[in-house]
Image 1 (spheres, rainbow, N blue to C red):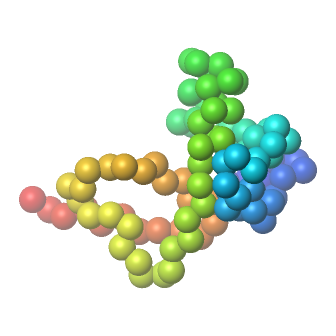
Image 2: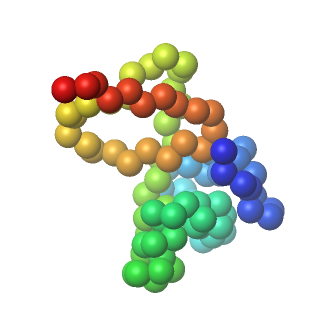
Length: 97
């Protein structure tokens, strides 16, 4: 599980991510940036494209809650989402071909 940055907690982040994008303010975006900035993929975006690119990206994130045992996607599906697990865990099973 991710370490929580100082002054940020998972509950606050999830509350922000559950709100519509147009109801988020600059402080919300700053909280999201601070929370997600240490994910290597997202830190690379900031490093290569600047803070504004990361702010734009985290501003588009949404929360989705999954029940245990739910199938999120299947091997071979065309991707339409990028998942970041904020809380909990998942299993990934790749079929042997």
